[in-house]
Image (cartoon, rainbow over all chains, first blue to last red; front, side, top):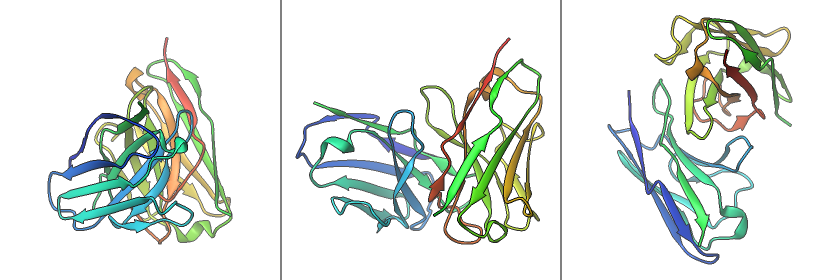
Length: 107
Length: 120
């Protein structure tokens, strides 16, 4: 199984800040990587797939990069609605695996 | 638009059974593989199982293999998860999800989830 390791596990930031979350796979997954945002009591929402492909309707302040084993999610200028938990997920092979999550909190 | 609506959750005793349903609409159900993903209270996301678009292959996480069974009724556009020999650690919100391509591992669409609680 491919293990996904996210860092940091939590992060405090202010509106307008630029933040970066990293995700590392235990083996190469090419660019088969998605990022999700989840708010309390809600289903996850996909932001990015294929490592850097922004999904329809997602604001352009979100961006993704990486390939192989190392990936990043960047939010260029935090907005109030961005405070949530973020997960990476490898879509390379079954079993699908997720990172443990990064909780983004307001400073 | 794509809609996935889970139902069937509830409270069940350890060792008991429960069947979850996921009613799909807004797309041609027979053309897509489907997943179940769960989330225990305060925890992260865990993939549970996947069934191919035609039901020909099914895959399970080790944590549920031999206890859970995924199935689908393409005539009813409905996905199922039969959960037997339930344990306390199966307590979670269960989501059905699908991608945009036939047997897609990118989870673009999610239902709202249904709560399963295993407790005596």
